[in-house]
Length: 304
Image (cartoon, rainbow, N blue to C red; front, side, top):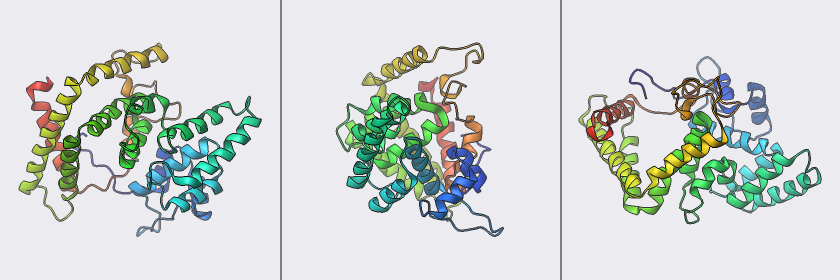
């Protein structure tokens, strides 16, 4: 993250719609039918959307794109509590997907894409199956339940910003954490420490620099495990596989990394646009901690 950039804690309905790939009118309809809880309005009487609202919007869009009716999505969310509860969504969503697949089978020529999406959801789980197969392929070797809902949420956002290749590379992180409980414990501990840097903590509080050092040390240890396990080479293979599936064209900039090039999803936006529309409720102290950790990483001779 650029030191001068501060992500919004909440965004207006237009930015929320743009990031989720939908329209303000559709979001208002979600409110009307009880699919998306209506957030509180600000002092200007405009709705403000936070991180959890955006996560739910992204899941709604993915499920709707797979052909699931909005009423069925609402019923599934009601049955499971929230959009982020449970990795597989329970019996309700399974029954909905089964009925939908029967409908799609009758219209196979016209609805082939939707049927394939639903089959993947039933095979991989209703959450993981909504991610691109390029991403889920990276996670298939993991034991069932080892990927947390928060991990899937993170991959969902990354796929929206950087495309399937970026999310597949990020999945390497969760592969390592699932296989190394000690690293997962360290990750949880540092995540908790960062969350504790709330608005009550000053930017120059010594804890900010301490947590930044812990984050840097953890990321270095994680990267070392990735390299030692050969997963770093697997990431290189991912780039090769992606290039084979998406050959460069004359419109692609020379030397531009695939993670941020124009060869992403057709409806995706630039990284700058996306990061300006995805809200994270980070305090100034936490943002400063992130900046310090990145500075330490840039100064680390092992990364040069």
